[in-house]
Figure (cartoon, rainbow, N blue to C red):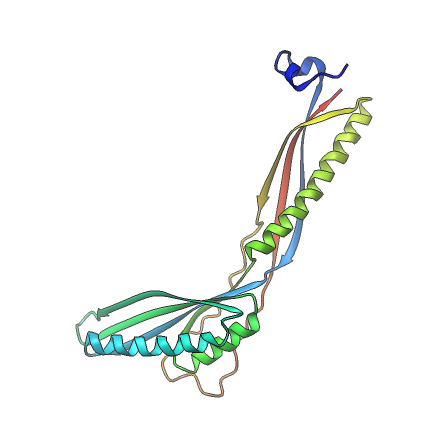
Length: 220
């Protein structure tokens, strides 16, 4: 008769079962689906009040431009700093604007507008969203589990045994290689961005996502 799970604690498992340990992997590449960038405002003036006023004015204009895309772009302000330069000749003020979108065309259009306002762009980075990765993890987990089941049955048949049950299942997730950072570096001197400057270009890459499943199988 088949042993109950309670019986397993009373006897040596290896006396009744052949214990099989398996590892199977499922992997797939997926297109990165989100784009993010950091926009920086930098101003210089001979007083802290003046430089802060300049930074604040430009950030207000930038946030106003971002509101036109509030359905497709997440905009949030980043660090803000005001300090004197090394020889105390003038004050420097900086603030950043973080932009993130699942609609790259809208983000690039907004970046183009902000560049024309003398704001600088610090990299354009494509990445895989958490939602897309989770959906793919679920799909790959199912695929890896089917591989484990098929391999366990193959081994059992070869040995003239049957699969009694799967005792342990441990899935592990990996993002594979890290997203390719396409650091489209557009930091430039003020006034160099012409009104007719073309919209910046950014191309996403594929990211490898992998799921590995470790399993302990009891054959009888």
